[in-house]
Each structure stands twice: as structure tokens, then as C-alpha cells.
Length: 208
Image (tube, rainbow, N blue to C red; front, side, top):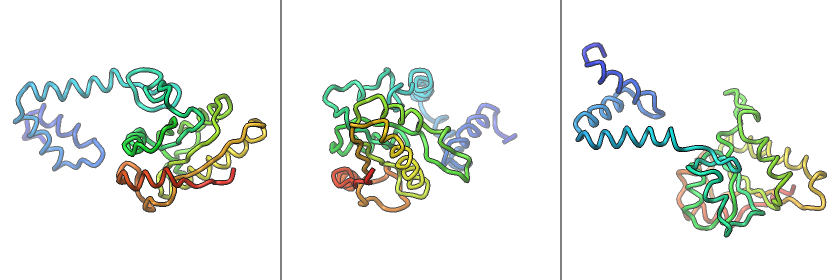
């Protein structure tokens, strides 16, 4: 990069750090920004800064939000006895687009992966168990991704939630998962709305 002006080389380097962006794509993005009007580049920079400065995690469900609690947790029309557990905030967006789900959410911010050193303490699992203990939740929908990490995470959550049953009595806690209209190895955010809707409506009772 020594033949490039330092600001250009620096922007290419920063773009190349983004997931899925190789050096060639980083170069194309950089030169697109260079050719763009100054006000467009300024809006891009301001949008990035605004996201970093104003976006926080909801203290209840851990979805991204500008206000705490988030708009979904505050919505009085939501079924507060129903909580859907997802891996990432993008999964919330995917499920919301279906219009089929009317409960609340809990975002784990990842999935268990022993090979990558991601254990229960790295996710929002403890907070989920506390919600189940202290809120009138009657059903947990496990909507982790249908891949190895997602299935491993779901199985772990089932075991932990079953351990809570004596504490919750006489309240009954139902644990369900999305119906298997979803492809194995896929991600929720890439599933079409019809498939997700059928998965929500046909969720499976895991017999907790």
C-alpha cells in the first residue's frame, strides 16, 4: 500500500477488517467513497458514528435499541408469557418480518462453540434463566440457527431450563423449537418469510 496516499491506504485497511470483505472489495469500496460527493461520504461517516454512539443493548432482551427498554419489550400488545430465544439481533428482524410472532425476545449474541472457546458465560444465558425465574413466562421458543452450534446451544438451554422446573412450580414452562421447515446448516436471517412463518406456527414441543 506504500504507493497509495496514506488516507486511502488506511481506509482500505479498515474496510478489509469487515467480515466478508477481502482486499479487492475493500479497494473498490474505498474508491467508490473517493468518487462519491462529499456530502454522501459525510453521511456515511456520521451514520457509522451515530450507530456507535447511540445504539445500546436492551437491558431486558438484549436486542439493539436506542431506548431502554426497547420498543418490543415496551409494546403492551405483546404476549409477555411467550419469549423467543435467538442468536443475533438480525434474527429478531427476520422473525418480525413474518408478522406471525407476537411475543417477546431474548438475544443470546452468539451460539455455544467449544472449538472457538465460546461457552455459556460468553452468551446471555444467565440473563435468560433469570428472566424465566422472575417473569411470568409460560413458553420459551428456541429459535437458534439449524446448524451444529445452534443445535448444541438449544440442547444446552433445554437442559438448563428443565433444571428450573422445581423452582417454577406450580407454573408450567413449555419449551418449543421452530418446526423443521428451515434448512439444516442455514441461518435465520437468510430464510424467506414464508418458511419462517411456518416454522413459528408449527413449533415443536420439546417436552420440558
